[in-house]
Length: 373
Picture 1 (cartoon, helix red, strand yellow):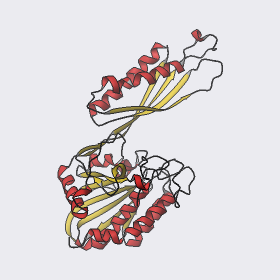
Picture 2 (cartoon, one colour):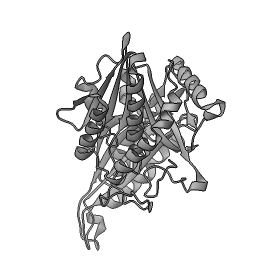
Picture 3 (cartoon, helix red, strand yellow):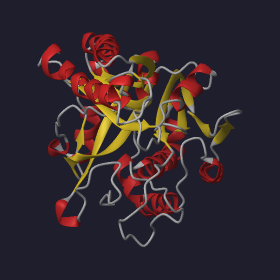
Picture 4 (cartoon, helix red, strand yellow):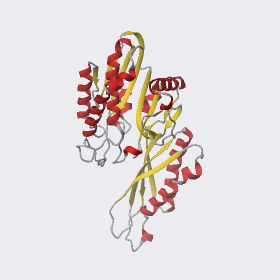
């Protein structure tokens, strides 16, 4: 390709920053990305990009058609949803929606993909094939990518790429790594049921609180004592809720959590043992346990090593040998993995955003998360 891509990127730098700040200021939660989608549609149509709105879900797909013969179709993806977080960055373009914040960097992803669209429109006459631009809603709740694929919006795609700003990689560098990058995610809910009684006669009841405490304690032994140490597994119970009872033994306690892994064996171990331990621990206290499980997302796996090498070569060509960095695999999860399972030639990249001198060192999902533009 004769066009200098880096020069075009620098040419559109101010545009990318302006759009990032705009989307940062007006975040919307998963499934509520109405204004965001309308604004993205307007941005793309202003470039002359063909836009297809999704019918029963927010989000859209833009198409840039290459000017040279070629059948290849490549997809570039950005997520669009924000988090229920009260922003505390102090930025002049901070969220104007109370209790909602782009604390996971999706505002950056949208702006970067708009910048990529600008560049691709400039060079479309040199492209052999087409490029799909997926602006995906509802990433944080692991339903967005399912919707677009299952409803045919991503048919005929040969390769796909996703990217995430990442605070364990230095600002201005990127991690393009082979193999697993992020973990799978499963959600579960356990409801412990006992029998009520007056607190002065606990022997007449079956204490669901005591049973639930035992479940929480014993579930932690799965990762510590049953799983292989060289295969990471994280089990977290994030919420515990009981009925309000004053002066009597509690009859019901429910809890919700997740487990994350890379290896399918660890994933299956957690699924089987959480239910078994919940039943057993509850039974000790004369209670019962109901287990509900929902699979949320696959592990992110950069399995196409040739594509990974191509991306690394492109990064070095544009930004020099020092642009690449490795980082630890993340136990967090990413909805893009569903697309990667269906388009084997897919790539996910961590773009560094850690810059302690600029005050950018907070993790994603934190109310002070910032990036150095």
